[in-house]
Length: 119
Image (cartoon, rainbow, N blue to C red; front, side, top):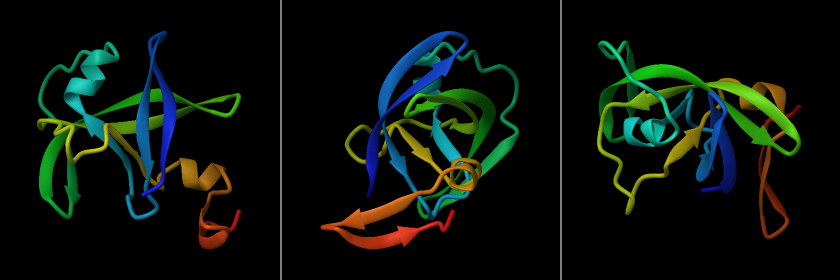
């Protein structure tokens, strides 16, 4: 999977984490613990459902800012109410919901084009 070191910001606090750019994910998702490290306070009941290959869980939708090149760009992230397994889970997955609509994204391996969203 394509992974980039991505600066993410919430209320002026920035951390850099490895992000998977996933053309198969509808939305961007991460874990409550990572959001808390960024300074997000999670209140109330979870309101969103995250469904994937490994099942489903509930999540909070909280926007963050990601830095792509020199551009700071807002995205919504579903912060899952489940444990982050550092051995098998990416800290954050950037899905198609907004980034893929705004940026030309190409995945290549050994100079062979594997995916192009056509922007």
